[in-house]
Image (cartoon, rainbow, N blue to C red; front, top):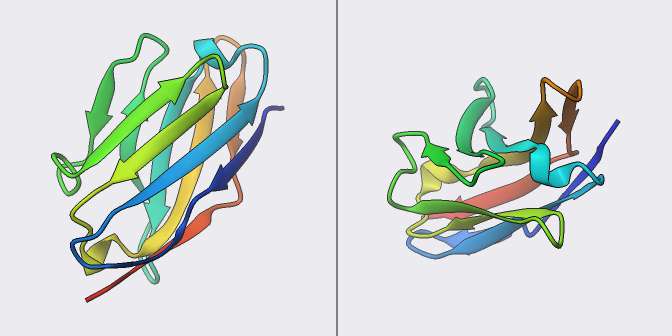
Length: 117
């Protein structure tokens, strides 16, 4: 399986910014769909952003216009730039690497993001 490791979480003030990073150790990285999910206390995990192997992106309505997902195939990393943070963005953020073709569905351990109002 693919090892996925997130980093970059922490504490930010409302209106501020944070950038998360996810590294996936695999030679098939460029073929993977990469996603960011989050789970707030007492809530179900939700999909935040997706980037395909072709670089197409999609976002949850709640973060559209504020978050940007990107990937660097050479470094085998995916980033999530989070701007204009709100208290409701507080959650554990998880990176997910997946591919139906290669039978990959790997999750990181999560990184905490806390936004203070």
